[in-house]
Structures are given as C-alpha cells and as structure tokens.
Amino acid sequence: MSDFLKFAFELLSKVVYNIAQLCYAFVQLFITGWMEYFLIFRTYFSDFSILGKVLSVLLMLLLAAITVLLVLVVIRHFVLKIRLKTDKADNSELYREIGRLNKQVLSLIDEKNRILALKVNTMGGVGKIPYVGASGLVDDKLPTVENVTDGEGLVTRGGDAAAMGAGGVFETKLEEKSLTNAMVAASEAAVRAKEKATSSVNEGQSRFPKLSLVDQKYQSFELPERNTAISLEDFVEGFRLFASSQLHLYYTPEIIRRFVAGMAASKILILEGISGTGKTSLPYSFSRYVCNPATLVSVQPSFRDRTELLGYFNEFSKRFNETEFLRALYEANYREDPSFIVLDEMNLARIEYYFAEMLSVLEMPSKDEWVIDLVPTQWEGDPAKMEDGKIYVPDTLWFVGTANNDDSTFTITDKVYDRAIPIELNDRADAFECELQEPCCISVEYLQKLFEKAKEDYPISELALEKMQKLDQYLQTRFKLAFGNRIVKQMYDFIPVYVACGGTEFGGMDYIVARKVLKKFESMNVTYVGDEIKGLIAYLDKTFGKAGMPDSKSYLERIQNLY
Image (cartoon, rainbow, N blue to C red; front, top):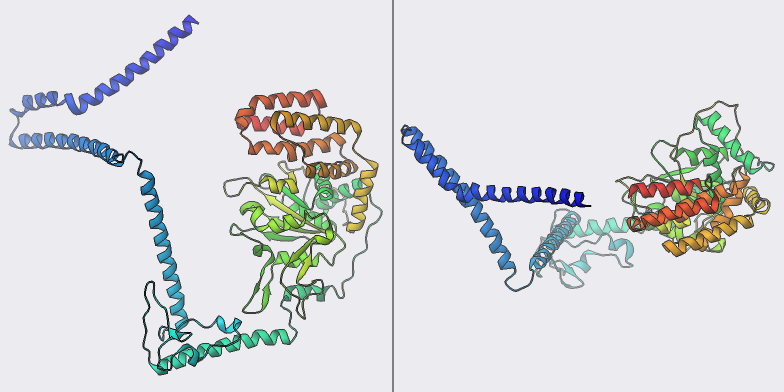
C-alpha cells in the first residue's frame, strides 16, 4: 500500500507542477514578459538602420495590441456576466425565450406570406378577389357576382367590406368589368366541379375504383386446389426446398420454424437483422409458396397517421384516394389462403403513429370487431365487401414488417414489440441444390387446424411451466420484469407449433424469453444492473443447465458488452 501512495503522490505532484508551469508561462507571456521584451528591443534598436527601426517599432506595437485586445475580451466577458447577474437572477433563460419568440414571429410571417400567395393565385391577376372556388363545391348556395360585391365593384363578404391584410380593414375599388369577368369565371368553375362530382355518383361510378376492380376480378376467380394432407414439419421443409429450387433463396430450418410459429402466435411479425440477410424476400417467397403473392408497401419517413396506409376521402372529387395497402387489405377478404402485407423498412417512421389503429383493432378479443372505418356512410356503388363504410380485417391476413437498426430509423417501442413476434435474421444460410419443389396451396382454415393439432399433440410440459414460473419470479424480484398476459398467451401458441415444425420445447421457450422478455433490458439503464445480469446468467445455467437457453444467455452477454 505504501508503494501505491508513493506512486500516487509522485504522479499527482507532477501533474500539479505542470499546471503551475502552464499558469506561470501564461502570466510571463502576457504580463511579466514585457520587461524582457523591452530589454531585447533596446539591445538591438540602436544598431538598426532606419527601416529596421521602423519595423521593430511596428512589431512591438503589434504585440502590445494583441495583449490589450486579449485583456479587453476577458474584461468584456466578465462585465457581461456581471450584468446578467445584476438582478440576482440568471437572465439567460429570458434571452432564450426571446429567441424562441422571434422564431415564432418569423414562422407566422412566413405563413402569412404563403396565404397571401394563395389568394393572389385564386385572383388570376385581376384584382383582390376573395377565394370562392372551394365553397362552390361544399356550400348549397353557389357564390355569384351579386353576393360577393356591393354592385359598385367593391369586394365584400356577407355585405361587409372584405377583411384583408394582417392588421387592418380597407376597401379596394376595382373596374366593374374586370371584377365581373373574374367572378363569373370562378362561379362557373365551381359549378362545373360540383356537377361533375354529383353526376359521377348519380351514374353509379364507385368512389372506390381500385376496390371495385377487385370485386370484378373475383367474380370469375377460381381458387386453386388445396393441400389438406401435409404436416407442419413437411410444410416447413417444403418451403425451404421451394425457396431454394425455384427462387434461389436459402433459409435455415430454424428461421422457417420461427416464422411459421410466429404466424400461430400473432398477426404481426417483425423481421430484424443486418442488410442482405433476406428480411424482405422471406415473406415474399413464403407467399409464393402458399400461392398468394404478398403486397409490398414501402414505408416513408413522412408517414404520420392512418391516411398514409389507408388513404382518405377527397371532398372535391367525391372519390376515395386508395392505396395499395387498402387494396391488399380488401382483397384478403376474398381469399381463403394466407395473405401477407409486407411493410418494408417499417421503422423509417414511428410505427405507433401510422399503424396505431391497426395495432388497436388486432387487440380486440372478437374477430367480428376487427373493423376499419373508412367513410361515414354507405353509397350506391360501394365495394361489395364493404358494410356501412367499413371493411373487415380478415383472419387470413398477416402483417410482416422489416426493420433495420441504424441512425436513419426509429426505435421500435415496447407497445409494438409486445403485440408482434420479432424474428432476427443475422446469418445467411448456405446455398444447396435440391429437386424442384412445387408450391403448397393451403387454406388458412387447414393451417389453423394444424396449429390447434400442435397444441393438442405438444402441450407445454409441467417441467417447462415450473421453470418458466421460477424465472418469472426471479425477473420480478431482481429487475421488475414480468411475463405479461399477452406474452404468456403468445408462448402457449408459439411453443407447440415450434415443436411441431421440428424444434424443441425449451428452444421455443428460450426464443420467446430472449426476444419478448429480456428485450426490455434495452429500455433500462443496464449500467446499474450489470452485476445482476451476471447473476441472471448464472441462474439460467443453474435452472436450465449449461447448454440450456443459449439465445437468452447470448443476448444477455451482448447487452453486457454494449455497456
């Protein structure tokens, strides 16, 4: 111990000495050193020529100016600090508030300029005429020249002088002929737009053209022959061979088992992993295998609400702006085989914003409540599968999202993870050759029967339940984490199907615990529970054996290495 104290004293004394030397050198440079500067100046000055004397004086003045400037900057800094503290309160917050208000003022000025520009565009360059085009499409009484002017060329609103500008009210005298021509043109355009929208409805044209085309498609559509004699294990292996032989895509049996078992546990699957591991191609190739190609929707960073996915009703054209997501959702109501909508790069925008309604709908206990409101009322000519302006989210539909974790994406929140089954694809499978494998056209009804049969044939054992309960108690005691009701239900659905696909009971449990329970460590301050994580790894070894729960232990070790 004495050697360490000697080492610490010598080290710290050297640091203090160097700091003192630095301060002394600073003082000598700008204050005490001037005596030496003048001594050097006097020594050489007498021997200089006239030019040398002038240059030497200029050099001394330059050095003096730099020193004075530095001193003034320091003094000004302290004066400003003192002024800010004169009322014994820190006024920096006040200055920040003033800056924020200035930004708001600039924003309002910019908004005013945009509104004025819109008014100028609607006037057609004739004069300051109020905007009437939109009202002509929604009001029962159309605007005319008489009800927007006072008969003398003065623009009015409701008989009063038009309110114009940012702070005052003033009247603008226009030439009667120019005003009349402009107002007549605006009124006629409004009438034509409204008549066109009304005539489209009267002629029976659907306000959902894309969905109406889906109705026409399935009037003469013949469903392919279904396979009703295949097991889940053969189903998984058949897909692996199909992807290899027909699409030249390669997946490990483990990934396919997790994907199929995930379908049994949730209607939402999230595929995560590094780029190039086949996140997008997995649902695409699987949908080809079950004879119903998936719909790919590319998520944009601008997605903010449900209209980005479902579209919206245009009050001017009296038509619904449909999206491919809406078309695929509607078409799934006609299909008996599994349907997939792939949300590519789903975390480029906040999932809980644009997908919030779908997350809530899929949580409804009764599938009769899986309904999306599109429009308030039913119109003549609306799609056949729409009832009172609503469409159903069918049980035959799954949503598959792909996600990258980098600086360009948002973190997927626990709200989304809890409702979905996450699947990590971080390794690429080796290529292999095989004979040509045909697709397996299977109905969702038969697939659900296979899932139910798996629950009967491979129920979770008492031993696994006992160990799961012990792990739950340990996590609650040490980390305040628990197996929520939703996770427990997903585990009861996931594990039997995972076993029926060729996996093991503890392998399925390990995967759910790692991806659904321990995943919550990412939202905790792991630095404060580092030692507890070591204890958790030791507890897993003791409860499940050294070779048990490899996914969970690997995930915990990775979390430890990050912090």
